[in-house]
Length: 39
Length: 510
Image (cartoon, rainbow over all chains, first blue to last red; front, side):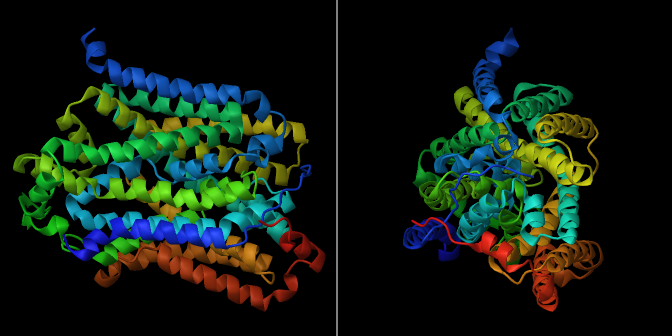
């Protein structure tokens, strides 16, 4: 099996590891305030 | 009696699975009916692991587990690149849109994708964008639902000999029932359960060819070189394990982009961001959703190539012309009632999770973003009317499933491309560009739809060199450029500073 055929299987692992590192390093902000729907 | 003794394991597992989904819907019935925010976005109180699995299960459908998996029987292991491309867009979607969308929609008190456009751009024209996007959702979703219901009904027919019309009715009625009862709560929780089943089934299905031929060495030996024929009758030889030999990489890229990009703009995916409960959950989902999706997809996408090891030359000659039947063939050849039962439950899970996600989207789009905008109604009437509309729409889908029009699969893919090209610039601009305007959003939507149609019907198939370039790519580029140019040109139409401060203001950090 050549490298490029095999790549997706290795690539997925590399990708999710890089993604996890990026998520852990970045500041994540969401609005957690309570509110009442008006519209 | 013979029928039950032959199928009792599959029937038992199917009943257990369906019963579980209906129970979840019933369990959340009271909670979901307490108000619009509960019914539409589950009061933004859903844990990260549920959202993560729900995003994964709604992104993959029956078509992924049957159609896409079967394709690698024809195209070889290179087809696994589809899974990689798809996962890249899943990561982009969570990194780029997830936290911002949750932040802004909570601040704006937005409950649907169309009402986000209205509340974010805040003008009379933005109200028209809201109605236009709701109309696009209603149109594009119809074909998608018919395609999914048709696929599930065919699975029931082939595995349990249930007539097509009864099978499609059962699938639509069951999914509609638990969605109507529990609203977004039951959609997300059933999607999460379905996600767990789908993840397990993807790994189980990958194991089948390995077990059948007696281990990895035997399997690799069998597919390394084969005398089975390609669709055009030439021996495949080492094509299954050689990059780009049976299919061009450009083709894989085109289809991969067209499917992957939908995760950036399809309402059934984006609405997941609305319901996440806190920062910790957001981080969890950002990390784990690509893991669930990526691992499942690479298991499934290359599966067809491995099935060559289970097929005789005659069987392979038939399957190469009918790749949709590859997974059914694999299960039949393996001949294990328990494994078949679990895999059938997984295929239902894939179909029903996608179906439930869009049922709630069409209900909310019609009642809140068309009806309520044109003729405002009291708050207490919104949820009951949403339920009635979902039931009526499901009835329409059932009737159309009985008489499916030709080319439904193509129409479904085309409708998905319209979503991606039309919605993404207005969403991305809304989230990131303070100078983005309502006029930019409206023109980019129209440009996206227009280029989709022109490229598909007047350009793509007229020129050989362009046939692998999916319409989503030019439509996406033109739509994005239109948004930027028109927004810059009409900067004065941008909402006032107080509104922008509300939209972009900073809240809690972690």
